Length: 345
Image (tube, rainbow, N blue to C red; front, side, top):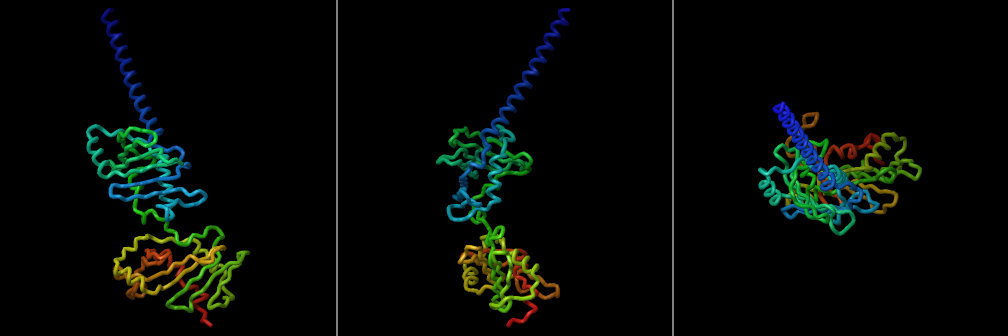
């Protein structure tokens, strides 16, 4: 009897101990979840008005929200890519802690953070950041990112964690870059809704194909060639062509030209010039297009060697030589049948 009673008490103690350990483990997990939600994440990203990113090589990117403007400012002189800024805000809101950094990897993680980490300051209207992140490399599985929450305005301790985003497989560090040319907004023509009023396309090699398209206040489109209206034209085709010029993007501000190549191209006449006006413009937006030498031999449908690169062209936009993709411009450069089939007067 006493033996059974002792066994009962032993089992009762073991059950209570197991329950206590389970409760303690659950409380630790709950605290970890609470930490990820309240410490790393920025709940109100709509109030974020400034983001500063710096790397160990001296690169910096300052992003600032401009009230009433669609695009953020980059380093006080350019528009920033909306997609890249939106991705940062999404990351701020959804980042969570995946796990603490284990003791065995702590020294290596701290060394990588010190040597290759990026600093990110997040502001919400004040002079001091509300959050300061130090972003390291990806984990070996490439499903997490080593991060430290620094001693910003909230005074958080700098213990490293592995962070991630629920529903996203990958690492987060590549979203925080500092190269200005990668951050810059790539739009050259950007005429939303019905703001585009006039387009001029000049073919410098065949001037007789040059033409102008313009709409009036009622949306009626007219086409001029050599100063004369084009009559009996295919209205739908021309309207579709006009709409092609509402939005045009370049590929990259990095033209990959050497100083010698840059000087040569700067002294070269463009193949085409495109100009576009909105309803208030007196000075148009202008794109000058230049043929690009091919990087390899390609042939047309007739088996003839192509003289120019079929994938890319150079463009001069606002006094900068940039790189553009042919598939963006080919339809806009194509000569309409109404122009090509009619002799110039």
